[in-house]
Image (cartoon, rainbow, N blue to C red; front, side):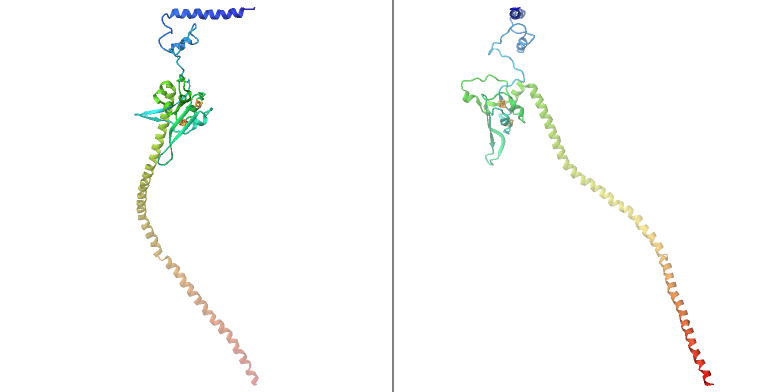
Length: 295
Ligand code: SF4
Ligand code: SF4
């Protein structure tokens, strides 16, 4: 029926209006359920009743941990010095979609070689689209996304092109705005450093083991030298035993047949001489046949 939708909508608004007053009466004198600023979120959450306005800038809604605005550079405090984690590798500038990061690398004044530190680092926060790619791709956890969204100014040409000094914030600040992220990253960093230390210790132990190895090998060499000495004793005895049978006329027995062989041809030569004498005898017979011719 025409007009029922409007009546339903009006009913919802009325319920919220009365609920708001009911909650205000319930917590009379207090705007929120408790002085805890997080109660502001609870009051505005799905379980909150009625309409409630945050009186910004006197009141501020707390932002969730993963909220991101513009990037900032993390540095570690070493006394009065700011030790920036950034190595000016340029990955963040490369991945930045609107190309709003400019980095100047430091050079050694003596050699002219690059030093892994940024001499200058600029971000134009008016161009930055708060995507967080720079923080996501940085391999050194050197750039992080800030929670600070109050950056309005009347001088956008200078104040909104932030330099290294303006972008730098201490590690303790990062730990305060992103405690869970910070803990997770520090645990991963500690694990990585422990792995590197174990690797270095293993690498240092290798040469020591190599030095110890020849010493161990030398010890068996002495044993080996001693072993032949033990074996040498039976070796000396063994040839002595073998030499004894050699002397026992084994060659002498062989020499005896050699003499026999020498005697055998001498026996054979003797019958050869009479064979020649027998053949000469018939040669005298024709001389006897000549005698009858004289008759
Ligand atoms: S902030 Fe990170 S990614 Fe960017 S230049 Fe520095 S080290 Fe490289
Ligand atoms: S948040 Fe995105 S747009 Fe802004 S500087 Fe980083 S990469 Fe560039």
